[in-house]
Length: 147
Image (cartoon, rainbow, N blue to C red; front, side, top):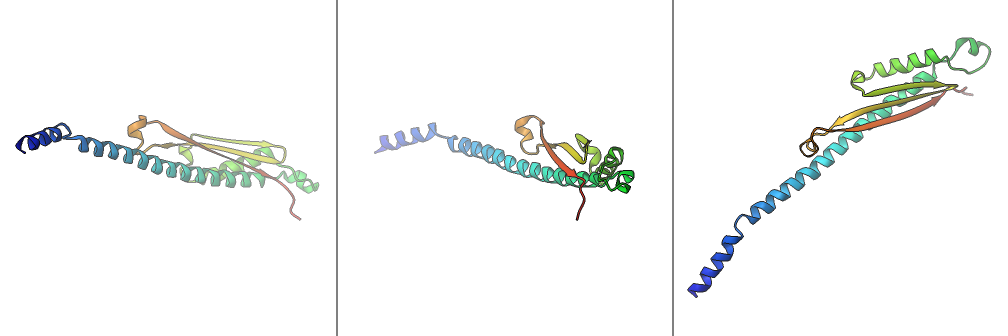
């Protein structure tokens, strides 16, 4: 009986610390999954903000009608005025200066706004070395007569 107890103690000694390693690995996995979820929600929130800002800017730009054409009864955009109105709408947005990119294009009777920004990883920065997640949004608005 004494020999069996010694044999059991020997087996236990070889596994010492394996639970600690398993729990440590589990903690790293939970940290990774938690970081992924947190950063994904942050990216979705930034994308939603960009989409709202692009929609507002495109709609504002579509109000930049050419007054001379309007007097003739035609619905035409003044490209300079449309671009100015869209730009002013973006400037009124908090964090406008921090955008990675903003492109406003006026073609015919449409205004297209494309915005891009980056989201810094928070918990995942440990694993990804400080890289950014790029997010973009695009909106198009058309000047048209309401009847």
